[in-house]
Image (cartoon, rainbow, N blue to C red; front, side, top):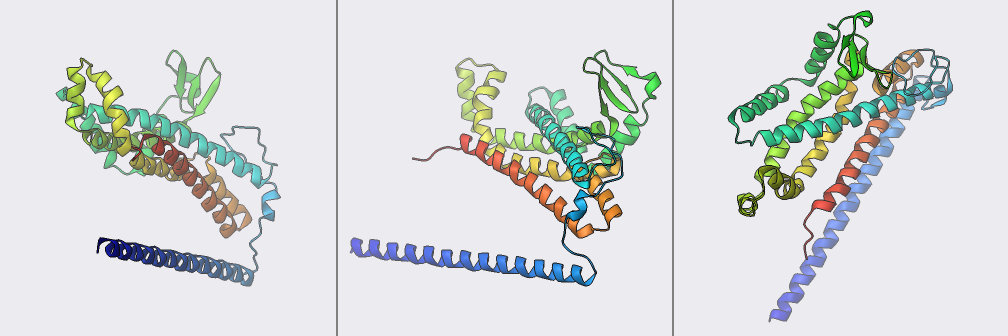
Amino acid sequence: MSANNGKLITNLKNQFWNWRTIAQLIFLAIVITSSILAWNTLARNMRSSGLAISFDFLNDPASFDIADTPFPYRASDSYTRALQVGLLNSLKAIAVSIISATVIGITVGISRLSQNWLLKQLARVYVEILRNTPLLLQLFFWYSAIFLSLPSASDRISLGFATLAKDGLTITALKMTISSEFCALVLGLTMFSSAFIAEIVRGGILSVPKGQSEAAKALGLSNFQTIRKIILPQALRVIIPSLTSQYVNIAKNSSLAIAIGYTDIYRIASTTINQTGRPVNVILIIMGTYLTISLAISAVMNLINRQFQIVER
């Protein structure tokens, strides 16, 4: 009787897997068909408007200057090179923001669980203010209220290793000036995202059983050692998946740089649209760029996530 039941369960499982496979294939066919129809409709509408889905214009001279250039660029260079400048500027802002937001977020998240009442409340105020204020508003604050209120280049504020002025932060030893637009963008993305990361870290730490910290104390470990060696490694299993979403949000939110005049890829693309009259073509490039960046971040984070997951035997 048990053998017959086992065969019945196996048959039901096989049927379930077959139906699931068929459903997935049907869904995939619908997606592919819809994509082809959408593309054909777009191409037909553009042809009727006297346009074509062509990217030949990318070889034409851009004829505009760019303030922040990570490599040599002239107005006579092509739109392709201009977009490359914008892409590198975006990647630079995204990378710095992700690193700084992670460091601050972890610090604030741990502080939210501190036994020190003052530190705990300060961390709470930090999170509540920044998390509940629009990012665009914060960018305007950092750029208009802070950096534009600084003295001119001739009256720079000395910080020892660097100087501050309206044109940005100049690192004396490196003889390098970081523009006010870049500083405002990174500060805004960092502060805003770190508030969300802090709550993710706090939730991850709270998910670790209290017995773990009690056992660490019994072994004579300090609070710092307990968090670093016992709590955080286990909490990362909960933290990393949610952290991935925040990193992707940082990449997408970096497009708000256009509001404060930072020359990221979105701003350069907007200028390209105005000059070439090819909105659909340029928008396709921008969509593909941000999609690629987001998928790359997700892929890296998924690899990291696998390293911290418990392997079932």
